[in-house]
Image 1 (cartoon, rainbow, N blue to C red):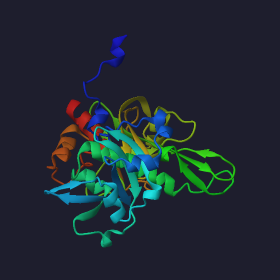
Image 2: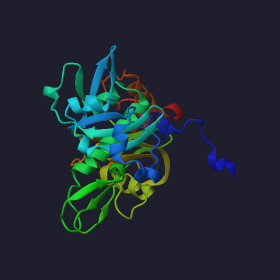
Image 3: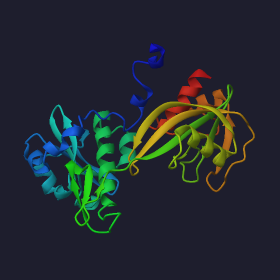
Image 4: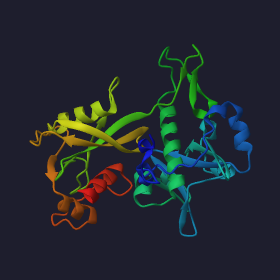
Length: 312
C-alpha cells in the first residue's frame, strides 16, 4: 500500500518558480478576520502590484517586496481593494493594487514585472509564492466587478476570496485556469516546440488549456495531437506550478508517444521537432552549437525537460 507514496522527500513542484508560498491561508476562518482589523495590525505587510509588476524596495543591495500600511498609503496603494493572503510567522500578509504608475515611483522603489522577478531571483521563494497568490487574486477582482447573473455591481467579501452581488446576492469565487503542459517522449527522444513569441532559439514543452469536462490526461493527449499530430499512450503527472498570468495552474505531465511522424499546427507553432538526449543536455547547459535553449529553471517546462534528460 505504501508504494503509492514512494517519492523523493521534496516533491517536484517544490522546485518551480512561484511555488514556494508558505502563507497560512486559514481559509476556513477568513470571515473572522475583517480587513480593517487586519490592516490595523502593526505587523501587517502588503504586496503592491500594478500592471503585471510588483513594487520592490531596494535596501542593502537586495529587493524587499513588502510594505507596511503607512508606506503603502504614501505610495497611494488602493488599500480599499486589498485582499488578505493569510498569515506568516511575522504577521498578516495582504496584497493591494498599486496607485502610482512606474514612472512616478520614488527612486528607491522599482516596479518590476513578475516574469523578471522570478527569472532573476530578485526575491526569495516564499515571497515569490505570495506574489503569485496576490497577483492572481487581484487580477480576478479587476475583471469581476459586475455580476455575471444580473450585471450589477459586486463587492469583495471574505478577505477577497468572494464577491457578492449587491442586487441579486449571487456569490462569485476566484477562478484558476488549468493548463496542461506536457513533454512527449520515447525511450530515445523528446518532442519540443517553438512558439512565435519565444525568445530567439528557445524550445519548450507543448501546452494548452484543459477544457470543461476533460481530464488532465485527455487534455494532454488532445493538445499533443492538435499541435503536433502525435498520438499518445500513457500519461503521467510530474509537477504543478502556480502561474500568475493571470491566474493559471500549470499541470506538468509526461506523455508516451505512440507515433513519431510530426504534423505540426503552424498556426500555433513556428517549429516542432524531436530532440535526442545529448542535444537536450547541451540546450540545458547553454552549449548548443546552434544557440538553442530551453525555458529558465523556474519554469515547469525546464523541470520536465531536465527530468527526462537526466534519465534518458
